[in-house]
Amino acid sequence: MDAIECIRSRKSIRAFKPETVAQDVLKEVISAAQRSPSYKNSQPWGVAVVSGQRKEALTKALLETLEGGSAPAPDIPEPLAWPPEVGARINASMAARGEHLGVDINDPANLVKAKRANFGFYGAPHVIYLYQDSELPLWSLFDMGLFAQSLMLAAHARGLGTVPQAFAIDYSAVIKKFLGLPDGKRLVLGISIGYPDAESHMNKFDSKRETTDDVVMWEG
Ligand SMILES: Cc1cc2nc3c(=O)[nH]c(=O)nc-3n(C[C@H](O)[C@H](O)[C@H](O)COP(=O)(O)O)c2cc1C
Image (cartoon, rainbow, N blue to C red; front, side, top):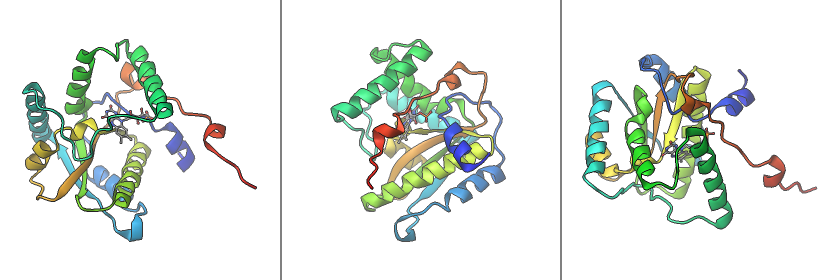
């Protein structure tokens, strides 16, 4: 698979086979992501891979926090509002996915179900948390985005599925304590990773994109 095919065929995977991924494969994928460019080669990324009983324990802690009624407090705040054009795109995308899954996205009960699925890491055998120093500038968040995409593409090239999850950092303080991260770190993203369950209806949804002509301005 060449790079273009890898980029085009990657998609978020939300149902996984139970098989674990060999640690050398996970290491290869993370090592490839380390080749991502970063501002002044600052490499502002830390990685925690959580598997097995530790992952189960983390899910339990997150579900207990949710059931206890705690408000989400992610280190990267959830946006409260979007510009109309972007908001419309998000709504259309969510509606299309809701229709595919046969769920009413406006039913608050479904948001709770979605959180539970996220905290269970969609059944993936591993979750990779990305973190960095809290005082780093916006460019470092940008760099982490590059790292995340490289990691997901490298995983895809090795037959693995991934889904980036903002919801997975909802209870950042709980997770950082669980991981034993020192003060002064911010959690940026959780990425569930494992072998995709190709039969799952969840994985048969294909998200849409704007046309290229809608996003490009050609000058000269
Ligand atoms: C920063 C970021 C946060 C995301 N958070 C979540 C999440 O919490 N849960 C989830 O299921 N998907 C999450 N996604 C996945 C997006 O919904 C998905 O990338 C988008 O709908 C496009 O679909 P595709 O990845 O299949 O191309 C997130 C993606 C990004 C880049």
